Image (cartoon, rainbow over the protein chains, first blue to last red):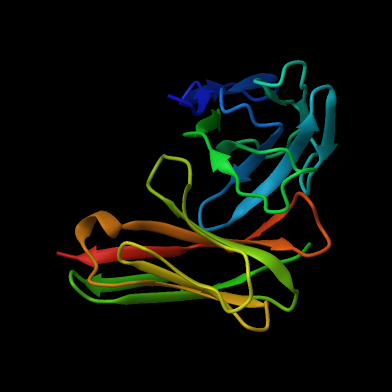
Length: 116
Length: 112
């Protein structure tokens, strides 16, 4: 079945360590996104990518980095520069933004990162 | 950045009751999306709206794209226990080809 997978589901790291969250999709979607979710708040966009080897900063990109070497994969690295990294991280994808007017995004199951 | 005002923040209802929630903004949108999120999971798309005035149903769910293009509502009829979760609205601005603006969510709780 087509879908978006994120791994791991739960991740614990010590303060000061970088950590990479995985996101893979087999929907043949061109665009992929990373969001951060904190309790009682809506989703905030970290980074997005419309095509391979290209990505753009979202509203809260500081302390994060991404890569898009393959269409199917969009890993997110939470660096030690991120001041408050503990959160629920969601990856999403959508059909090519250049051809489709309406941006229906489909989400993975999320990764809960806890920094100790 | 842009914001959507989603209300109510939470709802405590009895099973069988109807539910109504809405999102408003000062900006004009060309798309409204409604998602449901269950604990520890990613949001799932429920309904997508593309035209001002459009009324769309998905089972017991009904959503409308406001005539002014600045608001949308979601109704759930005859609620059941599996409706519990957080419902999010998201809008796509007319001058943006990528970004969804998200509401803060409405948490639906059904009293036993």
